[in-house]
Image (cartoon, rainbow, N blue to C red; front, side):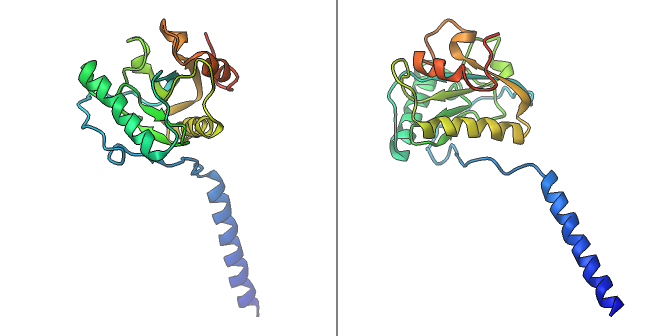
Length: 196
């Protein structure tokens, strides 16, 4: 009987230790990100890597057409990349990530490669996320805003962003109307926002 109790106590102790170990692991908070191959991206020619973790996130808007279904957002992501590569002569789409009104995040240059989303001073030390659409007169839908917030939490969990990262609007770092008046007003209420 005492051997049986000892085995039971040992098993219970093992389960308690397992529970404690699970509390210390990084949370699986990352929502799915639509990878480049799924939106049929052109192959990137970018080579400049970022030094992670980064302190800054620059939020912009594409100022073009919005999209609200996965099919239309994949097309819009292709359109943005085509403009950046073929018209601007850049090595890839300028943003690290794009946010669609469908509530999905589309991988641009990703966490590891420097974007072309802000002034040259800011690109090496920031992740650029751009909401697809024009947000001068309206805000993105809640699902797009949740996708952006989830992406930022994911960046911290994966070690790509510092836990005390700072969000800036595109107009905070460069002379532009981006991210649009309404989106800019909204991000100023995000917990990590700072204009300084």
